[in-house]
Length: 535
Image 1 (cartoon, rainbow, N blue to C red):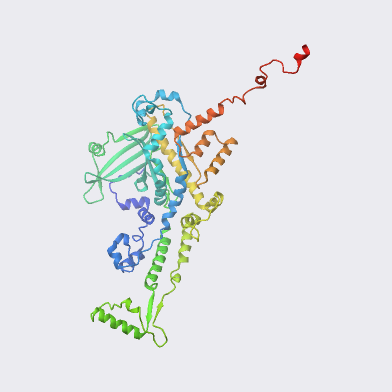
Image 2 (cartoon, rainbow, N blue to C red):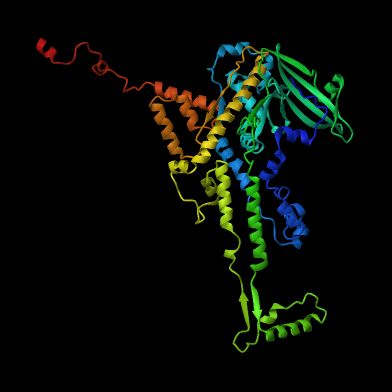
């Protein structure tokens, strides 16, 4: 069994576990000058400039910028857009239990926001659902879906942690490079390089499955002056610096860590996952190089040039000497002197020469490289077209079915990511509820349901028809129908809407509810003319 001692920590340690993740982050951010030697060499030679990095002064000296067509940015963002827009509300899978409210502990009650009085705002109606909603609010989860998926795609993995402290129950997400699993698979370390009181420390949060249960521990290591070596800090000092009452805790009955790791494209060769940008850097360099080279050629040859006869040139030179003097180091020729000129013996005074700029550079090569990148990363080229529009400049109108098949490759990839992300979130919610349930038996440990809607936007009319058809056929409940049609509605509004629909369905119709006997004035015998026969 090998558990890290963390007496040394530097960039090499990070790369040995996680690979060159800084390179992929720069690739996504568009900081390509720092990555590609050809761009660095041209900047050193003064051929091009990175105006954003070097500033306006350098850019004024060199007019040609380093061009970046950042295809690497679209690769993680396209599935992230699809998945993040498809995720809806998080709801409990248990029915409301009024009896559970009688057993709620005061600590659990304090976790749920509300006024501290006897008003409606202080009342807990559905304990399980309100706890889940509170966890979602504390975690700011709706705002985290997009960055979570992008970061997981770029880094090749994402870390999820759960907390229960004075800030309430919540989920936090960390970058991959803080995660270090133990070799035997029974534990994990989260390592933070921190500065406390201007001193460098290494904060190690450790979770380890033992016989008695899950043991969590906070370890603080102090760094040496200017070095990458660390020594343990005494327990009392560590508690004071970290602001913790205890550094070690045991959760009996727990057989899994609370920390959850979500790898991207996990394989036996890459058990912690791999970046979606792995293997893209060479083609990205070639795309930038081709565009920048075309820009250089245009800068040198694309401007119009004027051809004049020797007589005209001598006259321009004489006028320049008269205007600027004999000392004219830049040999300026004033363009105003060309407004009136003499013709030569062939009837020409000057001629404008300009090359065909449409022939400059191999732009078709750039398109082929982009297609190659998209194919290798399972990204539909039509997803790029929706950014750019068609050749006319505007995207053509299409039905939802046509869009679906155009985006098939990206949607298949996004659906896989969606399923993994939902499972990742469900584990984290279950872990938070596990922490709360330690001190309150009324809280149920569960992996809550996460509503899912279409990844491709559809018209509201189609959305209503699709869900109403499923409801009429008995394929889904009324509650599911209401939730799907109103994905952003609050839980209170949904419950009130269900109550209104139920009341409307049970309201007695004063006309339709009558029987034939009512219309006959409750006579025992029908009106058949029997009274006249008796007479």
